[in-house]
Image (cartoon, rainbow, N blue to C red):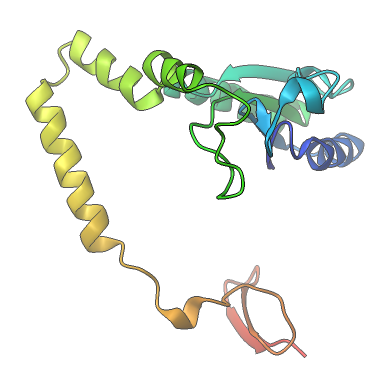
Length: 191
C-alpha cells in the first residue's frame, strides 16, 4: 500500500483496518511528503503523525530520505508482519516539485525551503557524501558510474510501443493479461 500522507490518508487507513481485521502479514507504507495537492499537511490532517494513527496496529516513522534507515525499517517491518500481522511505515520524505502543471508547488512554500531540503536531506547526495567520506569510491569514479548508468537507462529503456498504451487498463473491449497460480498466462478480451 502506498499513499501520499496528506492526500490519501483515507485509503491508507481503510486498508490498515482490513489488514488488522484479518490479521494479514501486511506492510502499509504512507509516503508523507508534507504536502497534499497544494496544501500543507497541517491543513489536511488534525494528526499528521500517520504512523500513530493505526490505534491497534503498530507503526514506525522512518526518514524516507535515508536509504539505510529505509532498508532497516523494511527489514524490521517484514519480520514483524510475518510473525505478528500488519504494521505501518510512515516514510518522511519531501517533494521537490508540485503535483502537476496546475500545482507548481511554489505558491505554498518558499524556494529557500525547497533548496534547504535538497541540500540537507537529498538521499542521493547523502549516499554520495558517505561513499566519499569512507573512501569507498572517488569523485571521479562516482561520475563514471553516473555516466554509465545514464547510458544504460538511455539505451536499454526505450519508450514503450504505442500498442502497450492500454495494457492492464480494465475497460470493456480491451485486452487483459493475467497469470494464474499454475503460472499459465491467460489472454482475453473483456466483454
